[in-house]
Length: 492
Image (cartoon, rainbow, N blue to C red; front, top):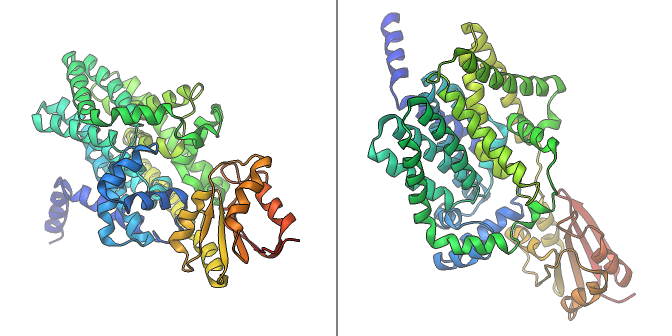
């Protein structure tokens, strides 16, 4: 009986669809856990603002932004499931879970099924990937399309079947319509294709890859003029405000890939153990591949290294001239880091050592997930809006600085307050009075709602103006930090 059960279990494990399905369900469950706990923040509220428009309006409004329209169009139709935080974010959660299943397939093809299973499990539990899988943004969708494109590419090079070529073109085009960082996906894939062409002495692979990229770009061609306008008109200025990334930025990416944005909540020993183990396993995978001098066995390691190093390194180098280096964008290449670690585990001698490494990584990642689920980190627009809504009265006006803060506030507000907004950030001192005064006329009280920092009112000019000319009645701060102050508009 036991032998029969064991044989059945082994046979089931060898069935190609069971492992990716199990990983998908695990990843989806992790990503749906407390998915509505955090307040929507500015970028998420902007996504909803766009998705609420008609399809032609989504495309027109997106053209004025810095991103392509595909994610917003998906979200437009996804709203059939509702507009709660959980419903909106679940679109990203699905993409994150699908990415886990696709990474399994990629790892199984480049290494073996066990390595694919380990890589998929690491991605399923990676705190940084779960974090962005719980945001109303396009980052996990870019990661999914990029992985699917890469799986189709590897499968085509192995089998030369037309369906994989078609899949590559469609997935790559979808990635382009999701985010412009797709160019770095092409870069990583191109490095791998050159390696494969050298390994099997089939240089036509390079021409076929170039044809696939060109076909994807051809599908993207209608958007290219808009992309050029967005890139050359200064969109994405928030990245430039971060300055030129130094060597520390490269280390920070690997830290984020390892333990996410909750590193401060880890015990020091566990955090450093996770860093050392993931990085050490990746280096071990590279070393054993070089030492084996077997290009066939090393192709998985080469792909994973290229998928990590080429995009991150190139984005860092380009950012010395034109800043575009951002963790949320580079999330797309996290699978390369984890696939490299899984390849290192595969190369560890001794089954008990391999199991021990997997167990330690699972514990470290799970600890981060627990912290992420219990410590709220985003701007608390839910509480700020509730505070104002409960205390608002007839004759009040809500004054937002910067003006885009009206989007996340409006998602939660229950009071129907007239709003006065302006978008010049920061305001020159000589323009504060002329900017503020028109919105206050005809009202008894004003709620000043502002955010602190380089994208808010870093010098506090608006707040000081209000304090000087009007009577402060109430003031609160909320996580973000978000400032809320109530003024009687009787001049002092």
